Structures are given as C-alpha cells and as structure tokens.
Length: 483
Image (tube, rainbow, N blue to C red; front, top):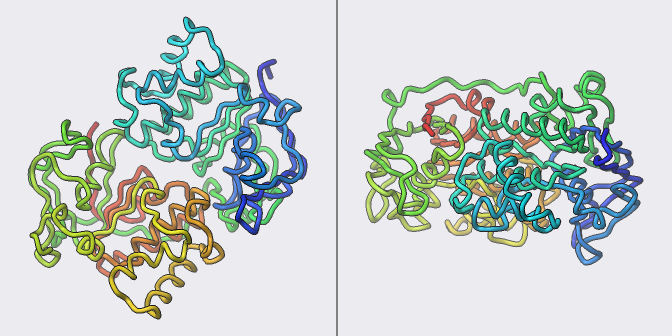
C-alpha cells in the first residue's frame, strides 16, 4: 500500500437507469482497501460496467437514473474524486477525445493541472508502457480498434491515478497485445501502488496478478468474494453455470475441422486486392484470397494489420484501392459480381456484416424492432418475422430485453444483438468483426454454437478474431495478415 492508493466502499449500493424498470446493479456491499487488485466478474448484464462507472463518478444525476445505498472513494462521493481516478471504458472509441495521439494522451494530465514541462515525459512513458509505437501526430481516427484500446489505457496511465478502473482492457487486442497490456498494468500498479479494479472475461490472463475476485450477481448482491484460488476452486462450477468464465472449465462445443479452400467451392475470391481505410494509403496489398462456401474463414493478425478493413471490403462496404473482389456466380447482383456495386437490398440477402462496434448498426428504439429490420426489408409476413425474432431472442438470452432500447444494453448484450440482427435476414455469407467481444461464458457458447449451425446449413462465415477458442471451434480456413 502507498499513500496514493484509493479506498472504495460500497454499502448496499445500486443503480437503475432512467427509463428502465429493473436496476442495472443492486445491493452491492464491499470494501476495497488501498492497493488491492480486484478482478470484477459477473454474467453479461449483471451490472459490472455500471458499477465501474459508478466508482468513476460518471453515472450522472437524477435525470440519468436513480441510486440506492452509498458508494464512496476515499470517503467521498466519486464525483468529487475524479482527479484520483483513471477509467478505461469498454468501447475504445468512447475514450478518444482529441484528433492526434499525443494530444489525446496528454488531455487528462492537462485537465489535472500537471505542469506543462512534465507532460511530454508522462505521455512517452504511458505510450511505451502500453506498446503503442506510433508517431505523436498520428490521427486518432486512423488507429485500429485495438490501437485505440491501447491509447485509452495510455491516457489513464499518464494521469497516475490512485484508483485505476479497466473495463475489458484487452478485448480487441491480439495475443501479444494482451500480454503487453497485462504486463504494463502490472508494472504501473507495482510502481505506484494504485488500487486496481479490472472487468475482464479473460480470467486466466489476469488471475495471477489479482489479490481478490468479486463476482456480481445478475439478480443483485455478490455471488462470491475472496482470493482467486478461493473463488475459482470453491465456486467454480456454480460460477461457470451462471455465465462467468472460470479458468479450465471447458465450453462443451465441438471443434470443426480445418478446410482447404483449394478443394472447396468459393463464395468470394480476391485478386491482387489492396485494401484501404482512407482511399489514400493501402493497409494490405497483393491479396489473392478464397472464401470457401459452407465453411468458416477466420482472419487473424496483429492490431493494425487491416483485418477489419479487409472484412469490410469483402462485405461490400469499403471500396478496394486496387484489385478485385468477386462473388460466386450464384450471388451475382444486377450490377455484377463485385459486392461494392450491389444495392443495400441485394447485400441484405447475400452478405451480412457484424461491425466491431455493435452500435454502428443499430437503427431502432427496441431490441425486437432491431431484429425485425432485415426481415421487414425483405417483405416477410408478420408471422414469419415474429417466429424468427422470438427464436433469436430466446437463443441469445435477450427475451427479457425485447422492449429495451438497444443503446442501453450492456456491451455483451449489444454484441449478441448485433450478431442476431444479421442472422435474422439469413444471408448466404456472414462477416463478423470480433463476434465474441465482451461475452460471458453463456453468451460465447450461444454465439459460437449459432455460427456452427449456420456453417452446417451451408452458410459461409468470415470472422475477424483474436480469440483462440473461436479459431479452434470454427475450424475452416485461416487468413493470416502480417503487420
């Protein structure tokens, strides 16, 4: 413990968002002593992110929602201690404030009144700690999702907080990046003694660093609280059943076989393809690829290699800088076989895209209406639409949220909804960018098993992922992009 570490006390605390009937989190009681390192777990929708946001003092006033009990940092409301608290949100885009990397990392320090002459060293130290090796004047808009995750963490570390709050800090990172972030956080807390609270579904990565595990119950209160060994050994089976990732607990799904694309019919092919985010600079060039029909194609590689850019290009949503993308003759649109030339209706039935950020594809005010967008556009009758929507709601654990606004869901729930909206229209090809991001154990199993069923039905699935278990369970063909 150091004098700079913060203390967090919750006493029967809970929060209900305005417009929601049930609380997001309720009846939570604990004391986190200065310098403790806490892994905060719970099923998707249990209120982990709400609890973390409450600790940061960012939930807002009575217009935003209603609180119960008390939650304090160093004996005061968190709103009065914001200068002591560093928060990295689940959505990396939400943490980007300024247009250039160096300015963005310096922003928090400037707000805290850190002497101007000290800020450059803090910025350089923080960027080095998270492994973000880009020029300080690099536009933040040009960063990949994983790079933005590192940027957000660097901004928090530069402030040298007494309480560091991390919400899924490695969710969009490649395996090397996961280890870099974990090591950088370990160095920071070792050097500063800061109190650390981390929400993370990769429990095996973080367990050894943590002194304590707190598990939030989906229906309120805590399911478990103790050392990692105590919680995982004593409560492991019950926690896994509740949706918590427990190290060493199998998921019980088959691993699909590897596929040789040369021996299978291709649904999409590329020739000398160059992909770009900005229509000026190529991220990858010379790509000659084949996406086999009725199988999975997994796109892997380090952050910034262009995986998402390639996925969007294959899906007909980004124009190629050079080369061609051609769909199979059976998928031809009125303007030919290049997906970028198809109409939105033609894309809807041919290629569905699940974006890395789920909110980028939400259009309506309720979960049920969101799932019905594609089927309605296709002219299906109400009975058929209701049957498809009800089945997907049930399968992905969203039935109780059918009337909720999609933007008020938890991160894991938003991801499940975004996958379901594409499945609802039954396209021939499904392209997914990080399909299991933010998923608890149950949500992960639900999504992966659904994708396995789609493959069995003859759908071509293209998935960008850093998740080794997704790669293994989907099998299929692997496209590996170099940095």
